Length: 492
Image (tube, rainbow, N blue to C red; front, side, top):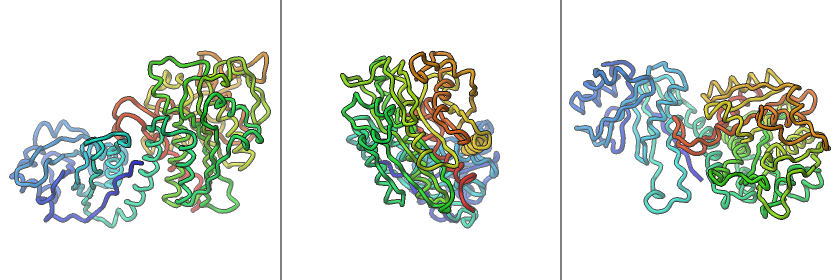
């Protein structure tokens, strides 16, 4: 598993700047304006920093942009990285600037001369998140990269008391999610996934694993039907973090955990199928949120439930045209076996409501390609039956810089999933595919139950580097849901 760098915050000390080996980062706000630590760098480099700070190149830089001064004369550092950032730049701009630092770390020891920057803690968080590298299966020199260190010199270190602990809790959860999503399916089997979640007991999370016999007794036949063509046993893992008042109803987070999705009998095209290792992204995000909450000892009651299955073609696999019965008792005509995630979620959602009577329920799933057509990779699709809960989620996502966009729902879409043979179909055709998937899930939400469905198919994994993550798993949702818990469900 990937271990995040733990940043250290310290008061400005000019003496070690010239002797620091590795990388030195200087944060500047205006052309020609240097804070004390920057003036020391300028003196050591015989005016090179000021010349750049007064140059047209610096003038054209935007907040969060970076420029490299390689092998600076008069310093032991191999590079001085100049970051332009206004002292009172907002949190997400500071994280973007930190991302530029993290992208260039490459295992080096980094000294950041942040000066008077207000959000130096977010600068550090951005650096930690962007420095992530999944190297578990690399060999040779690529596997020998050390994580390096991150020291942030600030004008007043007392303003950042507890910042390291907050950053560690956030990055631990994000990295846990990214590692799970990046793992290949021959490593992250349903059993291995469950074992990694059971390990959260060390942080105080209560974990129980429901095996196939228990799922059969509960009537989770929609979920079990998805995994019946695989050698991997289907499971539901329940994680309880009970840090709030005993009589406080929990928030329920429900995640789709399809460790590999071939599409089943409705098999996917070969091109790009290797990416279906990420089809457990919803469960991965739930796991990351639970780790963050436990690490920071959140004063909230939150239960995370994930359905772990593998969707494979086999002589025992479910077929198009099969009719399965959900835990709720509703019958479902399976039109397309590649629309399997909703079959997993509907049973786990019903179990969550029956068992916990939650104050709110949020499900996460890499559910539809249609949401990518609609929103691309910038925003998660948000569907909800409750404006208060939904607005809280959207506010939290915006605050954390994680894109989210509310999508429509309505009874008119129900006609698209009407079945002649059963209570409903599992797909409704190409039109409004992400909406009909949400409508399907809405059938398994009890009257009066506040609920959000998050379709993260476009945001859980991306093919290009981002400001806070390299290409691959992003960990989208860990920060937003952690903030939502803090803002709406945490005791004062």
